[in-house]
Length: 114
Image (cartoon, helix red, strand yellow):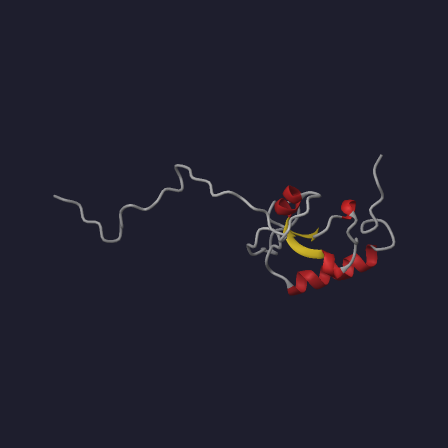
């Protein structure tokens, strides 16, 4: 059984929409990953802008309070889901792969031996 979300269908809908417009006008960086949000991408693009509840509504967060809302990428918001993070950023480990190798040669000064 689905739970009625007050920010989507209930009493907080109008206030949520007003705060969403305010956040879109004043913020430009994802509150989860810290990277810039490109507003030219539209839903359902993974990097499109959306609103994230810092404390999820499912965990008792206010559905339309401006202090509980932040700008986010859609994928960041989906990955965060209903989790709560201490400093509102997802911690990721540094990945080392064959595509991210240390630069051992300065190619701008490299000269081949002939």
